[in-house]
Length: 204
Image (cartoon, rainbow, N blue to C red; front, top):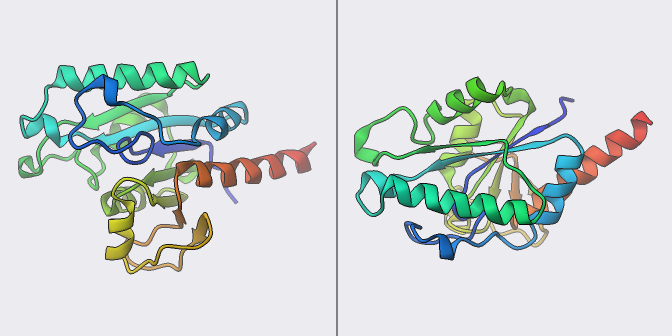
């Protein structure tokens, strides 16, 4: 079993609360419950990276400068919780641009993997859209996770996945099916903490 040490995150609706074409730094808010397991995973040797589609730039709804101001606020909120991102990449194009960096195409991964020497077999991709799951599968991630925040419930419905009673559900394999269906990001990260701490304890 390969140990996951790279956590690749979608941004809107996954790490932070969904806002329609977010352009105001004052509206950035972390999804509740993510900070504590992120800190614990960082202490266990994990790194966090963002890969997000930001078509609002290409559609003219906000500017690249707006994106960077929002990102700076996110970094500030994470640092206040004792968490540092390893890196981030975003696609600024609209769907009509037919670029190679809009998820589920793999340009964002190539950028991050090149800049930070990342390995897909040690990576989990977590997001709230089917495109995030397809993206993770296309790059060969060890696991993919669909969270039920943001657009997650709609994506789960399209995949024929009912809303689980448990916080975390291992999914049956199938086209575009995630490895896990999670109530939110924190639920999956807590699971990963427990798994990694179990492995660490057996190595001592």
